Length: 77
Image 1 (cartoon, rainbow, N blue to C red):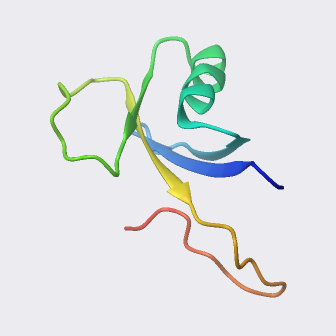
Image 2: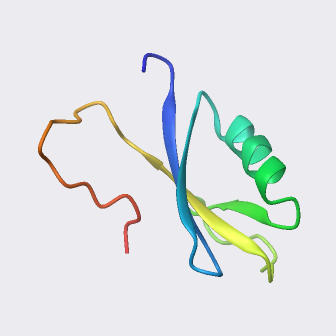
């Protein structure tokens, strides 16, 4: 997965998922193709964006030390 990042998201309607790509901008494009009426909000930035009724919060998951037989909490809450 060299150069690839893992972005995990949780939507307001409680759907969750993961996108593997090389940038947050590409992740937003991929998400928009699947959910055209939703917006992906970067949860790692201070919340200055306008709240959206149809939103999902995205986090970048650090995967540099993934080990077998290990549980990972992808969404930090």
